[in-house]
Every structure is written in structure tokens, then in C-alpha cells.
Length: 97
Image 1 (tube, rainbow, N blue to C red):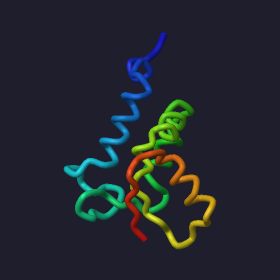
Image 2 (cartoon, one colour):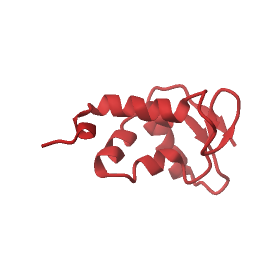
Image 3 (cartoon, rainbow, N blue to C red):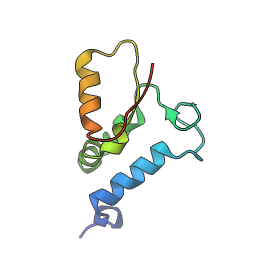
Image 4 (cartoon, rainbow, N blue to C red):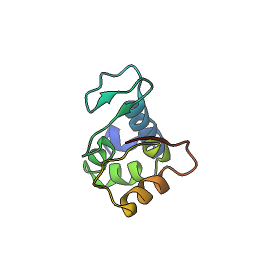
């Protein structure tokens, strides 16, 4: 027997994640407002979503639009940045340093 939350399609959960993170009308709870989107400090909210449970991690990692805004901390290595960019797939990227 599945709980109501587990009955939601992964694509729908991914959309909810995306709207939560990229909502222009949201209060900047996790970062600072830069006009059109929020810039999230580490630990990134994307990564926090992936720590809730295995299902949420799979959904977060497979939802390219979650990874389209990249706030680059100075201590990131090339491998971390490359992983982030590859998760964005064909989405337009937005960088802030």
C-alpha cells in the first residue's frame, strides 16, 4: 500500500521541486534574491532534497531543470562543476560566482 505522496509520478514530483526552487514569488528562504531566480549557498537545496529519501534523490538527480542555475563556490573542483552541468542536460544554464 503506497502513501499518497508515493503515488505521485516522479515527473510530477520533479516539477514540484523545480517550481519550489525557481519560484520568483517565493521568499528567499535558502539564499539571496538576484532578480529572476534565487542563488543558493552550499549546501544547495537541490542536494538537501536528495537526502530526504532514495526516491527523492533519484528524482532530484534526474530532473535537469533543477540543475540549470549554478552558484559556483570558490572551493568547488572541476569534477563537481562538471557533474552539476551534466545534470542540467539541455536546459539553459545560469551561472553566478
